[in-house]
Image 1 (tube, rainbow, N blue to C red):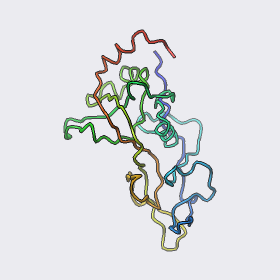
Image 2 (cartoon, rainbow, N blue to C red; image 1 turned 180 degrees about the vertical axis):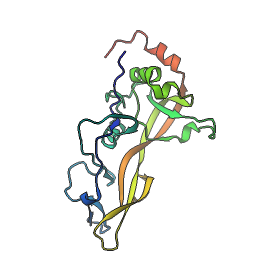
Image 3 (cartoon, rainbow, N blue to C red; image 1 turned 60 degrees about the horizontal axis):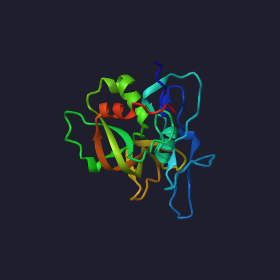
Image 4 (cartoon, rainbow, N blue to C red; image 1 turned 90 degrees about the vertical axis):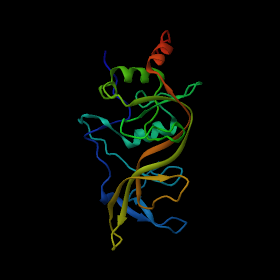
Length: 216
């Protein structure tokens, strides 16, 4: 059986923005922030965060362990399945995957904040059965979520040089909550959601639930 390539998977050939693409912009509030030399629609989200662009270069290999920032944002904003990019929401809840490692404190289901986009039920069952990463990882948890709320972004924070002519990466994988002032020098690469009404799902029960379901 041929397993589909996840929609959010990154490609090794795609290129992130470079420092020469960046400049300083002074918006109406008077607080300078990072911007692109040539702005495009959709560069910023509804909270004003600047998002990383990707230059598409054909011929790369699939990076199953990494997510494309543009597609990750698309799936998280629209609650689309990370594998097939179709709507993942269902009347009974939305499926997400998280990890509970043996050396970590037990997960508090009411305090989960995730950057992993959801999955529709067919793709969740398919992934758990065929994805080599998930199949051999005993720490994987399948969660059914009653409601998820966008809560922030994560990315790289840049600092500007004393001459105010260049942005330089200074901090990586930094979280910025929507409820707090954003970092003026951040380029976001992942959107996060807070999960509410969470329950753990037995993968076998999901397979049973899908039996007899017509194919899309």
